Length: 321
Image (cartoon, rainbow, N blue to C red; front, side):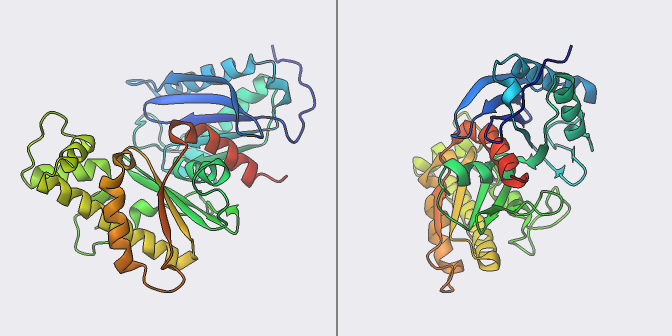
């Protein structure tokens, strides 16, 4: 039976749902960024669309058992993409069962069944990460920022004039599919020479192996990073190539919309200076105009919490106050 619901205060917690290829997480995120009732489920494999949705339903059900459930003010959903926020649908590359899946409507129905008819926002994971880092992380205090996730793929988002700027479908700032090599290899998106095809973790490892790098064990980008730290010339070249691609895209984006900081997170960014040193070095030759010359490139600070915090922040920033 639906629970009795008190009138939610505008400053009540946000129901945050973070949907990814390996986990589906949920929490009540409070106005100061603290989280309660945190829960998660593994993302189901080998099932249909409703089977994946069943895990989301379990997360919502567990959140609804919190004594603070009746005070929730809104819901934010952050999802791996592609997303279409205008239609409330997602087609995550790493959740094969979901293609144009109406996740926003389905979650709204689950909320309503538990007495919480809440205004809801759907955001891609790059946009959610951007909202999180602007609210509580490395982009805090910057009116104009770009943030990106460099992992299996490369995504991102924009804050302009202190407002999250997701665009009509929620994909503005998707820096991974800016072309930085006109004669580059084809990208999975159908384009050519995209940042993602050069700087993603998958691309870094693939290029290093093709150049003759011999992994000591781990053949992923993390293994390439370890080899680079040890001075392996091929591994160093792989990260230099990735850093140059990211620098070119960061400079192009900053020149277009005048951001003054680029925040980089994700698994590849965990390699630290192995990635950041070539980004900053190459950026000096791309960001040459006076209004982008002082552009900062810094690591993200929120780590694994960025998904849930970002889903909540996106809802707060995008819904009418």
